[in-house]
Length: 113
Image (cartoon, rainbow, N blue to C red; front, side, top):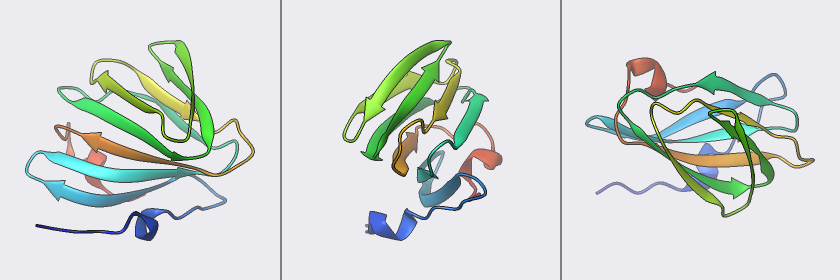
């Protein structure tokens, strides 16, 4: 059993989004993505994985396979790894996303940035 406090992984940086790994077990990983207003996560895919996204704070817009999806605190989304995903914090508050990847496509997906 492992226990962590989410507050320890919510950290914002004026230069760019931050990614803080909470757990990395077997082939899966859990992390928090943190965005200040106007910061973006570029479009990318997660081959062979399902991606679960929970909006912890704030609001913004996902683009999933070119479809815009507005989200706010406590919204939850799941996508498959073949869907293209990007995110923009287009709100006025900081945003944190709790993310679970069911399979790590490669080690770059399981590192802090």
